[in-house]
Length: 114
Length: 113
Image (cartoon, rainbow over all chains, first blue to last red):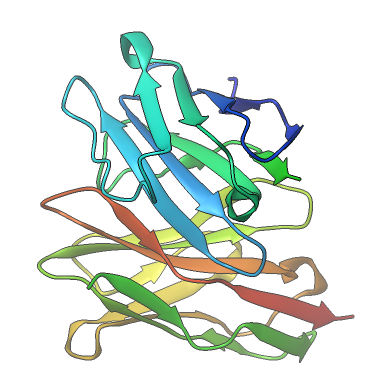
């Protein structure tokens, strides 16, 4: 079946602009995660959604970052007033439920802020 | 603070050599532990996971990992590596009371043919 998809695959933007990154999880997966991978760094947890529960936003680095998940499926990560330090690969993953279930990762969106 | 430490950032081995990648974590309470792998040009994928039972876990492609609770460790091993094992390996931990997953910085393994 289809895996996790993310769009766009690459995004180049100017400092100060807003960007939206999209994630389509595997159908039926109730848990969805966003991570950020900066050059030479591991994966930094940003946020996760589990069903209809309130999301865990504890990893969002600033109030410029927000995410929503509509209808328990597609998720959008929004970065407002982008800064150069936001440049990274943003990865989305989904799993059947949170916790012990395997996370299936998408290809990522490479964001470059000029 | 919750954290995962991977001891080696880069490892170079010859084919047939044995592999051990270190992973230590700091995470309160009962944990779930994972190793993920990213082969060149591919997505991150699960290699193996531990959440209960036998602390020695076997995964795909001949990999195994041992959970040692007293040492807060979950080291990855393979007795004989192949060129196709060249990849980046990530250790990760999540808790059973909340599902935020913390990843280590990764270890890049290069296997010489």
